[in-house]
Image (cartoon, rainbow over all chains, first blue to last red; front, side, top):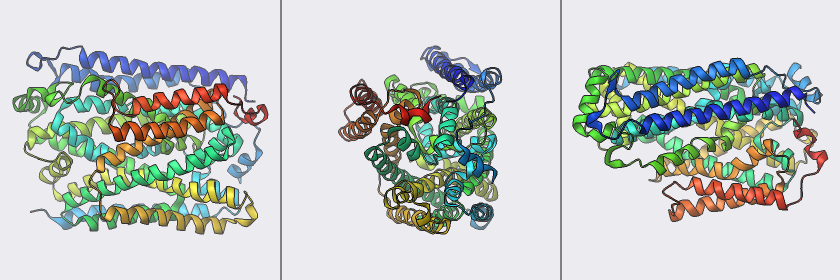
Length: 94
Length: 492
């Protein structure tokens, strides 16, 4: 039995990861299809069509930054051994 | 006229470097004198991967020939819409590590699991499940490696002008030899260098294409003149309808949680800090490579408009836009992507045969009958034989390359997705459910792929995962629960 801390932390971390995943999906979907489908009416940012800039470029950079922040805030540095396994311990040290 | 010598020189240097690393990996495995220690070192590098190495191991195993050649080739034909599709893969690195990573690591250490099959054996305690998963792993990995070999040799052929067979021999033998000699440690060390190589290569070719096209605005203008649809999310000829693109969120999105070549990496890292930085580095790197390479494909259309076969888009751009020396460096990028996918699969095939099947069933886990020396000789032989079989099959390539790769990808997910995920997160999960979902998932996958029956316009993986999940839950609810004692190692 690992510490209660491990269970609580990994549970929270899983929820954070799934939330980020859903966030990325929502952003990807809304910005990709939310700017209309008439290419003659497109606005451009840095040379890219608006939808593409927001969905593929901003979405990618954004999720990387949010992930970085989320890992710093929510992720705990936990020991991955819980003393129940001496063999693995030995072979790592030996 | 292409200057072959200037192009081949950086490639040769690169291969020599990789071989050197394999030799170093071999030396550190040779130091282990007990069988368990040797197995742990040879197949999982004694769980010593740090953050950067873990990130590179995950993304290089995941990105393959299709990220550098196939995908950009389709983007060349369909435009920005296919880049939108490729960006679905951005979160896969953090999803896999974040959802599976820590639990896997904890349980693997408790049960001394070295392979995914070890984990499955410990969790479900069923010979049928273990044998089925080993067989699925071998079959789908060999199909996948075949596709990688063919893709690599074709790429080599079209860029350097040497024959298909020459290319196959050079990079095929390189990967077989360094994997065989160096084991897991060589695999992840070379993966790290290959990851850096892939980053550099995609940056170089992107720069070359944007420069040749006279800047992004110009390129988009030219694309608009060729076909306005190239700039839309649905692509030229509306070839990327919504149900189709959304089903890729299953195949290359959440489905990736079931790919054993990626989940295997969760067993082998050092500490949780490594995993945290690997999530961030991995996400950033994989996103960059995908974005850059697919942009190269899509924007390449404006630079060199008349390439008939999509797969030739990236090689053609490379040769026409870059000096031979830089083209040689660039080509190492996709070859690295291919080799790093193949090496992980080779080492896992070897582990499946030597450790999961032979050591467990024939030798009954008797360490005396399998001293490290023998493990080594067997692994060398098995990796070599598997590599050579795939190599020979690739000499006369079947024509349906793309399909082989996607087929293997989906097949692995159909078999491994439920047992892996539910095994970690659901106490009630049992061997009946695992067996039903593996067999049923594989059968459903064959059915939906071969008959091309489509449910609501999605690709075959969507109904397949629905079937295997339903079977898993049904089997687990109605079957007998695993004994509490067995499950103690899985309590978190």
